[in-house]
Amino acid sequence: MLLRQFYDTSLAQASYLIGCQATGEAIVIDPLRDVQPYLDAARAEGVRITHVTETHIHADFVSGARELVARTEALLHLSAEGGDDWQYRYAARDGAKLLHDGDRITVGNIHLDVMHTPGHTPEHLSFVVTDTPTGVGPIGILSGDFVFVGDVGRPDLLERAANVANTMEASARVLFHSLERFRALPDHLQVWPGHGAGSACGKALGAIPSSTVGYEKLSNWGVGTTNENEFVRGVLEGQPEPPKYFAQMKRINRDGPAVLGALPSPAKHDAHEIIALTNASAWILDLRHATAFAEAHVPGTISLPMSRSFSTWAGWMLPYHEDVTLLIPAGSSAEEQVRAQAMATHAARELAMIGFDRLHGWIEADAALEAWSAGGHSLHQTPQIDVSALAAGLRDGSLHAVDVRGHSEWEAGHLPGVVNVPLGLLADELESLPPAPLVVHCQAGTRSAIAASLLQRLGRTDVYSMVGGYSAWTAADLPIERTSVITH
Image (cartoon, rainbow, N blue to C red; front, side, top):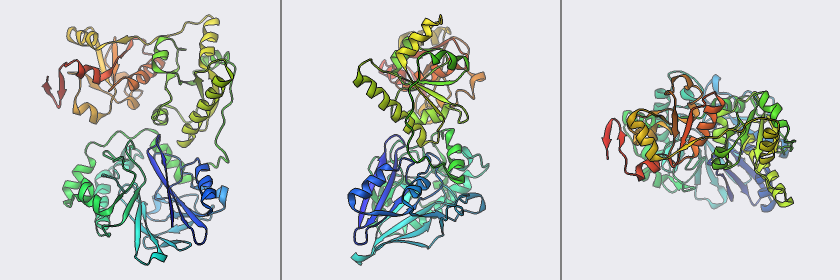
């Protein structure tokens, strides 16, 4: 038996290729939309992808199942569990084989036995894997978003992301009973989860790529909690804010993602287009370092440096019905131009992973700034403020602040009297934000730079970004609050 894990750091997502080396058949589980790595791995290992499946209708990325089937003509397997509201609407037209609890997928000499494990989502499946020639029974379980290393799948997304009211507690109780089935599995079974640390699909995911059933019984709070009411309280408490794009992903993956054929390669545009784009209130992402953006930027552009969290914050902010243009840092040499095109292509790939396909193209950032200035327009700045100046301003009332970290971060410790509006919710809470002058801060500075640019686009001209964030505040030994208790 051949097993390959593919891990995408931006999405903290794991997918798998399992192959039977005796027959040359293989299956891919939970593929991303970028399917080339699976094709390359299958070719290198001398197997052909004959089956494709996924554990559930994903909320955090666009499934690559249809894309991979289109490239390989493999048989698609999809869950038929979860009731009428949670069926794949494209299953029939794509000729998918529907799966129920107790069914089996056979890939050469390998069996994947289907377990219906609802709770995270109603249709969720896990797959118990057996390499039959060994004759010793199952080797592991592909647990998807059901059980992670150190955590379990969150049951609140139907309510908080898909807007299905009053489902959190009921889903948590369903998840508890699914975990009873997990605890009944043999301790030696390996656990191959669908996500790792950094995913918003749980609150305490471990960074280890795999585990065992026995180890999770000992170390995983969710697996180890056998009191139902205690579990429900624990699993619903402290979950991170689900990004806005999760609802969009659910719809796309339920109805059937568009098949791209290949990942997009964005075109380079003339710098003078920046004026027309800005006049049309187009969405423009500036991928330069936050410091460079703060020093000078085109009004209305969003600071979103290329980082591990690029797609997450893009998904929070971008409207899916509008085009986006990228401003890419680029030098004049041939090598620098190649790097700039590579950055634009990578950004396009990250956007495609969350279903954002309306990419207009890219413009050299410095050239765009020059064209903007040459057209008689003024560049904007984002004023910076340090810890001591903010502390003084908060004391005498000359400054107001908003903490753009997540709710759980804020509850663990925050500046005295400072309100919390997570970055992804700023646009929704614009009217309730404190008055001018307003200082935004996060943990270290990355999110506050994005927040300041977004607020400027939304019309707030009085925004400062705090240098160093909450980390700098605590390093200066300034007072903080935790659940209304002031400490020093």
